[in-house]
Image 1 (cartoon, rainbow, N blue to C red):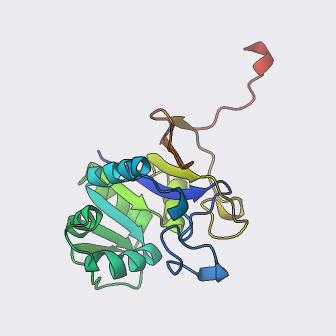
Image 2: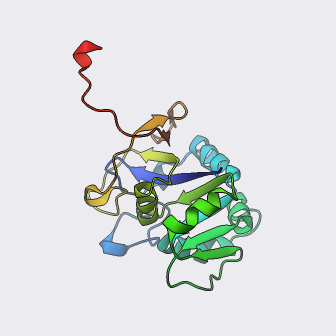
Length: 205
């Protein structure tokens, strides 16, 4: 049985919108696109690239898919990320997209219904960005790993992973030691660990 890994670049206040470029996603008047660049360094780039190399399939929400499909197919094979993304089996969750243009893409009409079958086919399925999709999969108990790159910046606006308090009670365990990078980003990998444990009196520990 494979796993679903939710891969997100995220700020201290939970914003994941438009890390890659100024015009990546201006929805809601978001004016801070491209915020990841000042914190990028060789070490974090190697960690991100290593995760991409481990992917067996890519699962995206419609908005992120449209961003990726307009960019990565136009990059040359000398770009290792483009080479990997263009070759991977890709799945986009959309009720309206029936004929995806990015080669190797299959459209899924319902994430909760269709994703379990993907776990039987692939070892590591990565959801990149796609916050709405990630929230739906978390609520369905289908996210096995949160792969978070946390950046030392806040915006006070923008799309948040747990917008308006959305989320489900869930416990996670640190799957590998946290790793910090020279320009301030921190890499955190959590795996699902059942339900939260509460009501413990720490004075009795």
